[in-house]
Image 1 (cartoon, rainbow, N blue to C red):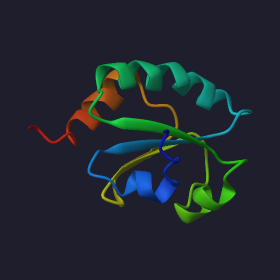
Image 2: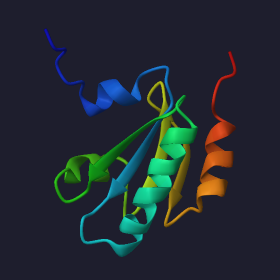
Image 3: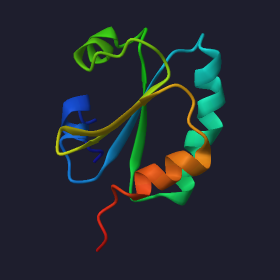
Image 4: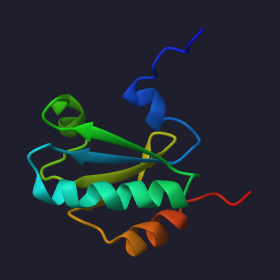
Length: 104
């Protein structure tokens, strides 16, 4: 039996850090971020990465005052830990995110 999908709020409330990529299909810089996020997700499996299309989910974008895309927001337990708008190079994104990973 499959588990029901978790809501956006349930996902960002968890213990696991969640990086939310607020993006749009028409956005050139967002397309540049896609392979960077894919690379970082493979290298940093301690962080969950999800994508939110601002055109399909304007309420989520408005709730977090996303005014430009791409906007990356890192959450843990519902709190914003870090936020950045625009393209972020892979090495810089990885280094930044690593600083928020809880060492076991």
